[in-house]
Image 1: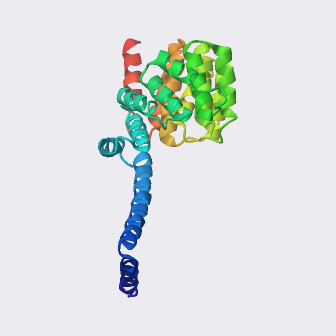
Image 2: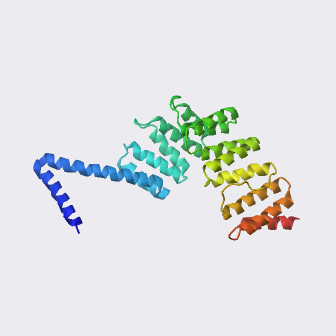
Image 3: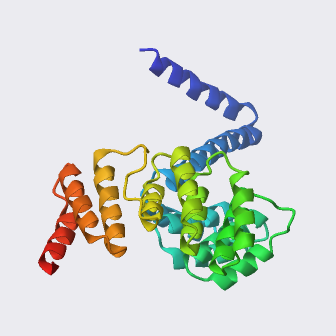
Length: 284
């Protein structure tokens, strides 16, 4: 019941300020509401970049960028939201405008390089990373340097960058997974397995790393599931991956057994595994 009284008091306070010194009072009130709007907008921008639907965020930032083309924070928001929406070509185009802004920073160039990699423009991404001063050392910079080095099969350089990146973050799971995948493509299965295991230990929700771990074990003809956290659906999916690895290695009967395990483990109908097993039975 006190809320209306409090609101009335606030309104009275604003009115009193406004009446105190005519013009200066009006300016004070205007500034006060501008400050409130800035806070509200900052919060809205954060929401749009984190929990909002990516395409809704794109619409919001695109509209706001048209209204305020001079604001680099809005242009950054547009670039980030386009990448979140997996509209990578458009995201790269948006970031190309950001880096031309007079207030652009080295981090903007790094984000642009990230967008270019996602859009498949590796050469331009490398140029953009090369334009960042060597003294600007960040986790994201070294993560991208490692990925670019990987794409050029410069393994020693990639390993060095991955190691530096891991040391610069408190959440190294995803970069350990990337490094492990690099080792997997080189045929260094034991080291790949080690890195995938560490990635899962760092982030038990990282299913990609779990699946990659199974691929590394399968490549070594180790057809057992590792002792890692997994729910029933994940267990079935990993058994399916292991089965396909065994079949690819020519261990068809082992693969069939793993497919049966996957089908019986899955809490629902596992169509992909059923289809694979049926195809093998029909072929044999």
